[in-house]
Image (tube, rainbow, N blue to C red; front, side):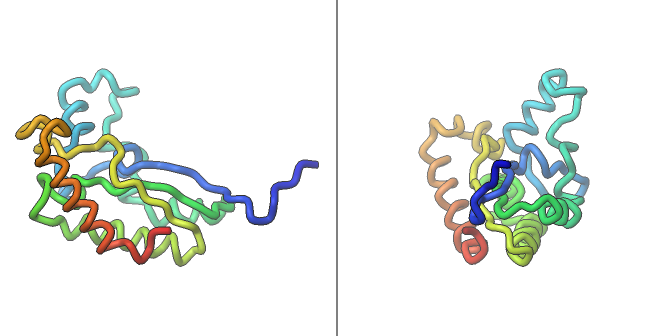
Length: 159
């Protein structure tokens, strides 16, 4: 029988755009995935776009319990820039900030190692529309602000 080492890391990986979804009034701004779905919904399996996904935003507590039940010792997710900053920088969405804080605190309280990706190809659409996305240095500066905000806000929880 094959045995894994005692300190073997069991985990899974997701991203905000793939799992969170979107509900009316959640304060999330549009990102590239949201725009693409609006333009070409036929490109998405069964027409299920980034507004639905697997509804982690609504069911995160149950989903984290499933991590525990399945023996996870690590979990990698992402923070959606467009859930934190409604356009690209400046105005912060307090609902988004609280969502990630609560989820991350719960993951840590369950003894699960937390890894966080800050960008999963989900650029706030305003940065693409107003400034040619990553080809514009203003986007890089906006990302720097976003990353700094995330480090300061969640750095105590992320492994």
